[in-house]
Length: 91
Image 1 (cartoon, rainbow, N blue to C red):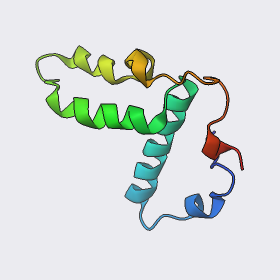
Image 2 (image 1 turned 45 degrees about the vertical axis):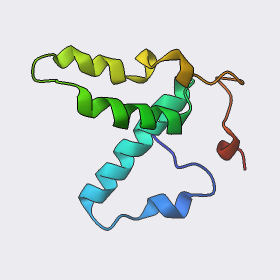
Image 3 (image 1 turned 180 degrees about the horizontal axis):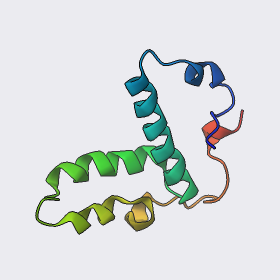
């Protein structure tokens, strides 16, 4: 079960549409998975959004594996307390 970060509960209670709720849940899941894998979420999303358009998944579906958080480049890894909370997680 995913839980909203403290302080933002009101932002996750309502969505205007079912598709909007699904999109929010998908993005939140990606961010939390990146954090669990010791990545800076913003840097990871930047990497995905810049790398994905150049992939040709029709001829090489396995190329999507490069985008998974556990396969992310080492420079996206958090060096300070990788398993600890990020600054915005602690309120």
